[in-house]
Structure formats: C-alpha cells, structure tokens
Image (tube, rainbow, N blue to C red):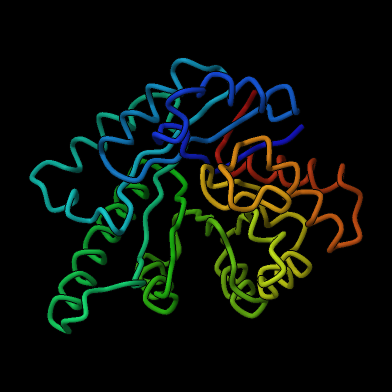
Length: 263
C-alpha cells in the first residue's frame, strides 16, 4: 500500500473531479493521503476534506509566501482552533522561501523578516502542541537550518519535495529529520535528488506527489494526482536497486510513525 504524504487536493485544479481523484488513488493502492495546507483558508479547506474521507488526514499552517497571514492578530488562535481536530496530523507547510524576492533590497529583507517571524511562531506552536512539522525550503537552506537550531531541533520535521544533494541530506539526518521525494525524482535533470534517493537511509524518507504539481514522467506537464506516488516509488526502487515493495513498505511505515497514524 502507498501513502501520499503531501497533496493539495483543495486546489481548483481538482474542483471538477476531486472525488474521482480520491477514488482513483484508492483503487491504485494509496490508502492514506495527507492534505497539506498553505494558509489559514486552505487549513480549513484541508480539514473539511479530511473530515469527509476516512483515508485523508491534513495539516494546518502558513506557507512562507503567505507569511502575511501570520501578521494578522490572533492567527495563532486560528491555528489552534483548527489543530484541535483529530484529523490534523502536523503543522505545515511552513518554512522559508527566498526564491523570487523583490528586487528592492529593503523590500527583500522585509519579506525575509516576515517569513522568519512566521516560521519561528509556527515552530513554537508545533512544539507546544507536540505536532510534527512539514518544511518548505527554497533558496533558504542556511537560514532554515539556523532557525531549526534555535529550537534545538526539538520538533520532528520532514523536508518536503527534497531536491538537495546527499551532503545536505546528511545535515538533516544528523538533526533527526526526514525527507520526502516527489515526481522530481523521475526528471532527467534532477541529479541531486536522484543521488539523495540512493543515499537516504531506508528509515528516513517518505513519498509524496505535491499534486497538482510535479507530475512524474511520463505524465510530466500534466496535472499530478495522488496515485502517481506509485511512479515515484518505482523510480526510487530502480535507483536504489530495491524491490518496489520494500520502498512502499518502508516509506509508509516511516510516514505512519512520523504522523502518528495508528490505523
């Protein structure tokens, strides 16, 4: 059985056939999908979906590119209200994203500051609620690790859509964190991700789609769906020289323990 640990099923790309997408994933053996939020509105939408489907869980959190949500009065109270539901498995996706910052240096630094404040606040929230964290990191590696070091890496984290090389993989493993691989692993121009998939300890990685984004080969350029997680696993198995069943079982076991799924 497969697990898609990172999906955005509330996105408008699924508005016309969302139920069919979920059923199709189940028929392909995907027995759990984690619907990951990016802001307060999507946190509520992800929870609503998870409450409608036994096979879905969700997260609550504010993406770094939506950090303005975290500047609103009472945003932590809103997170707490949503996170009180037993379908909420983690805080995420949160982190830092310095890709495509404003060209003006002062504006760029102001955006970075806002992201860092939101990240710190949500890490503290996750630590208080004893919830794991789904990390989004783009072009902000050193600042992301430094922020986690501030809290002594006391929250369990998975770095989603991991595309860095083995050296950075080892930095995370030393801190006790996990990584998750997407359809990028199937792209011919992704040597770092492929090398990390080969190097990752079998108990330290998950599988995900990040759907509707990053559809794996041979579906690249089209809408990604949760059942595509099987194609991610097949490529990782090929790279590692492992049976697909080993990758499926280990990655699902790792994710179940991380998110504390008991069923």
